Amino acid sequence: MASDGVLLEATGITKVFGGVRAVDDVSLQVREGTIHALIGPNGAGKTTFFNAISGFAFPERGRVTFRGTDVTRLVNWRRIAMGMGRTFQTPSIFPELSVDANIRLGVSAHAKQAFRLRAPRGEAKAAVDGRVDELLGFVNLIAQRDRPLAELAHGSQRLCEIAMSLSTDPVLVLLDEPMAGLAEAETDRIIGVIRDLRVRLGLTVLFVEHNMRVVLSLADRITVLDRGKLLAEGTPAEIAANEAVRSAYLGEGVLDHV
Ligand SMILES: Nc1ncnc2c1ncn2[C@@H]1O[C@H](COP(=O)(O)OP(=O)(O)OP(=O)(O)O)[C@@H](O)[C@H]1O
Ligand SMILES: [Mg+2]
Image (cartoon, rainbow, N blue to C red; front, side):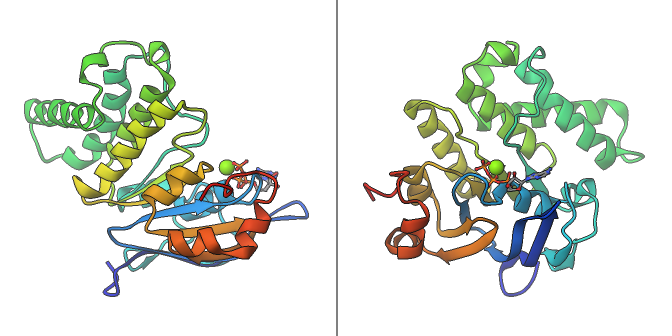
């Protein structure tokens, strides 16, 4: 960890697709123990920026530092091993498998690395079982553990995904639109779990979200992108009052009631 409390730092990130600068010279610092939101209108470059941070795409320019180490050119699984977990805007789950099996896949893959040559088979299995139970308990899906994921409500599927992102023991969790398409009651469940990521697990969170009520209630810091560029950065109060942010969202109504 860098001594100044900055867990993740992205500096001058630029990613070009064809002629389009999807992300154009964007910088951001995520401090340890904070919940940080990344917002912006559709196509602003949020997912592209997430991909650059997590190593699912390499930027043409810029630098990503995680826990004090330059990871700009590191492949994604190495960043995951360093403690970076993430979920995807398009869920990466196995709908026909049970909740338990989905989470177990992630935990087993991680344990294989962690226990290789170190623990006898039985011990490794007990550790995997224990961790799966822990994660199911954390997202409150114990009762549904044997049901195929496809049968669950959309919100529960999202919770399962969050649990899967925790299977690699991250210190930083990146969530890309964890509440997309959910009803209000389901949204509140996810809000509770994201809060618990910090409060109960002591993790740092960077999340993308369109619902401004959610963003303002959860985030300590907010970074705003617009058409690939950094538009603003600040506290929820600062962002809600920011004229440039208000005009970028004009007509979408998202800031009308805040
Ligand atoms: N693989 C790709 N190839 C070409 N263009 C892309 C690719 N991925 C993204 N883009 C373009 O880059 C821009 C930013 O897209 P991105 O998905 O990062 O936006 P976003 O802020 O996540 O949007 P949304 O809120 O809709 O998820 C868009 O113009 C998009 O069309
Ligand atoms: Mg996106």
